[in-house]
Image 1 (cartoon, one colour):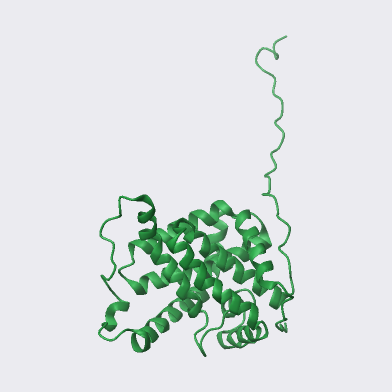
Image 2 (cartoon, rainbow, N blue to C red):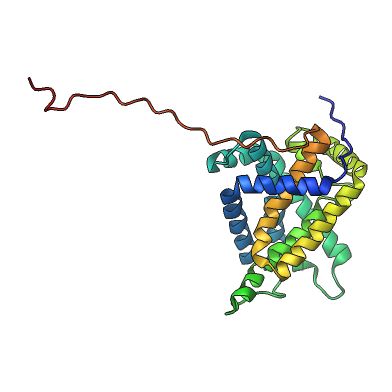
Length: 269
């Protein structure tokens, strides 16, 4: 199968955002529970940046696969989603681990401020939360500021020069391409659609900051939104499908009609 990236039609970012929100609405209960649990997990491991990075980046990639599953097969069921993620584990787990480790090494060697020990990527007590604030809004910010920060950094993990490209992961999982072929195809689609993807990069930077400061309770939703956004952009550029599939109703299990049995009274002569 030969796949060539296409140039997206004008208004791509607005169209992708609309379609991503539609997919979120279809599976709203599942999305919300998943992202909330993930963000709470990130809060509890925020002293361990490498572990937090694995959780955040893995969650974003999982959201891409979940969006594809929701678009193609209708309502989400926990067992089916877990089975789907398990079927992609040989790509999902090594890819997540590799990107986070490379990102940690780049941070330690090139980005760490002078005097900051390199082992801060493994453990840090800087800005650690010992006790939640008694103010509810401030407590929400304490919980969700780390997931927001990790989400903003995840865009750069999707674009490590020479190693990753924005559409590489869906090319590997949804098209079945090997690592280097997926990187080349993902990079080609990214260059062909440079302006829309620069706008997506801006969303990755701005929305986590806005939500982290003013709307912290929306940070979990951003993980679902960006995962779905990446999927619908990939679908249009590589598969030529410009709209979500029609929503499917949950299948109804057929129940055989009950056979009427005579009651003890009606069976008497």
